[in-house]
Image (tube, rainbow, N blue to C red):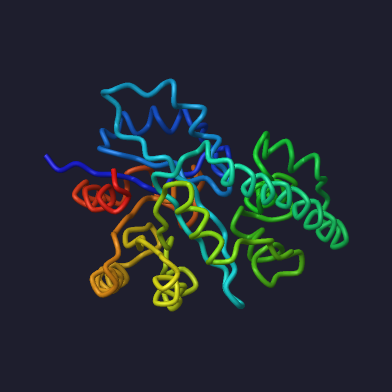
Length: 273
C-alpha cells in the first residue's frame, strides 16, 4: 500500500481554521507517514502537540513558513526540522508577528476610510491568539456582508495592489535561509508556481536553498515536471503538501496531494536526520 506525506499545513496559530490537535487527529485518520505544520511566522503548534504525539503517530516534522521580499516579489520559504526552541528563531519570529498586528490595524483603518464597516476587534476575535493576517481580515469583511465571498475580499480590497493593501515587513532571502540553517533546519521554496517565484531559484540556491516544493494544490502537472527538473539540476530535495488552511480557495485538504513517502528519505538525509 502506498503511503503519503503532507508537509504544508496551517493551523489557527497563523491563518488556518484547525487547531494543532485537530490537525493531528486528521493526519492520524489519513494514515500519513509524516506531516509538518508550517504556520506563518509561528512555531507555537509544536508546543501544543509535542506531548500528545505517540510512537504510533505519523512522524511530525517541526516546520515554519517565512515571508520573504526580493525586489518587487514576495515569496515564501518553508523550514523543516528546525529547533522550535531556538532563541534566534523565537526572537525574530516574535518581531515579525508584532508587526503583523500593526499592519492589520493599518489595513482595517484603510477599509474604514472606504466605508467597509469592520473593527480591529472584529478581526482580533477571528484571529484569536494568532498574529493578524489578511485571511483574518478577509473573514471579517465577509462576515460583515461587505463582500459575497472570502476570495472577493482579496480581489476588491486587500489583495496585492488593492486599495486597502499594506505591504508586509518581510525577511530578506539571506536572513530567512540563514536563520533556518542556524535553527538546524533546511530551507525550501514554497509553491514556486504562484507568481512565478521559481524565476528566483538559481539565486536562492546560491544563498543555500535546500529544496523546492513540487507538489502543491496550485500546481499543474507541467509545473510539477518543471520543478522536478529544477530539483535535479540544482541538487535540491523535493517536498510537497496540501497548503491546508481549512477554508475553500486554492488550497487542498490534508493529504490531498498524494506526496510519496519516498521523498521523505532525501529530506531526512539533507537535514542530517
